Image (cartoon, rainbow over all chains, first blue to last red; front, side, top):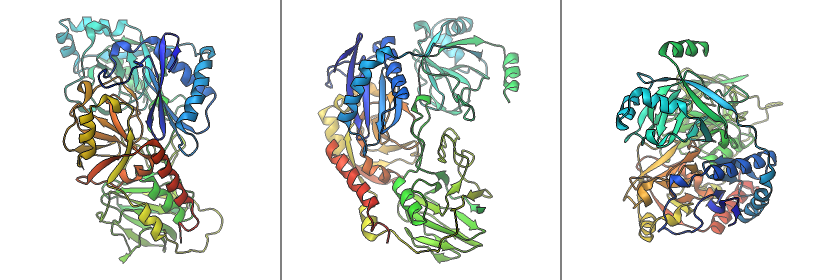
Length: 248
Length: 315
């Protein structure tokens, strides 16, 4: 336990070879409390995650094998033959104490062209109808916000972006699609994101980008990194075709 | 340079090593052999480093032609292998003469059989690993399962071709490392979100592995549990072997091609020493969960690694 800024610091064993660091989660345990709500994801908690991740990348701990950042948590996987939970927790406390002075990289603003609706955004009409607005209003709402890259997860290069305007927040599809084309732009609750590769997926598809989100042969594989800012720029089907050609 | 020709690929045969750790921040899953112990032992039998790339076959094995002399070992489950129609012993180094054909069929025990070849499979590494990640079509042989007509390269074993020694895994080790159907688990990070009754039901239930299980996740069928708060929560990182309870109340065990983050509460986590058993579970297999504490989990892992390091492991 402890506090970091306004957030709570909590460690939680996840498995015999992994440990969670939570920021900004309820400190009290017990089943009565249940899961925290989306409201408790704060920007401050996210910044703590970024700082700790950055420091762990700059000064790796021997025996740590992988790091999984998310909204307000960092899962740390380690080699159980080299490290133990208590030992790692003690080391991490010294990292948390020092991480305030870590310089985070300047956030980049990445613009992603999106062709909204039609075959590229098969759920756009339904999303607009659900919120009793026109398709144009829905596009305007989605493309006028600047989103934060909270973390990458789910699939290689899949960035969880937030927050989608409350008026546009839409639950996932009741049953996920078997295959979502690469480049599809989806909405789930107040999250939005781009599918980097064709995968099954349950987010509501509002458009598609011709830009490649994940290129394994590049030094920077993923177009987006934690902490980046993202804006979606509406383009026409003709522009989509032209840009898609340029990518091949 | 040595080659293997794929005459028939089997149901799902991929190139695997021990996976790629360290790319969680870009969302890349480790992947790797579903039964890493079988891979490690197979490699040692043929004189490779433990983590060399090999072929992982699933439920039905393939047929492979060796144009040149080679040394191979089959580990994991018994797929009824023959070499030019002569039965091949499992867990044993076997010499293959130029032009011989190694043929496997349907499994006679668990889900996966490994074909380890002296030198190891030679594929382009992705992020330092030869492992195939099927969902994202990355790594391995073109990011996919093998097809008829594929030709795989084998790395040079280095130096002179050593004299062949027919070595095998000791009977004691084979017995101790045999896959378990009672999986030992430690509490998951949301273990205390579940009611006492849910815990009781979870540990007394017999679950059946669903057909749609794969390298990403093992879906279980059985009595549903009451999942807290509709089963959804804020996405967070997930561990290998995490037992998440979905909105339907049924467990999914996250496996080697797992997503790097997920949004379901996790009631338990399979211990490291039992992860290899997951790779041998077949659809319709019945399993149970047995709770152990973290000290016991650690002791079991240390014991397993001691066995793997023992001098009489291979005889």
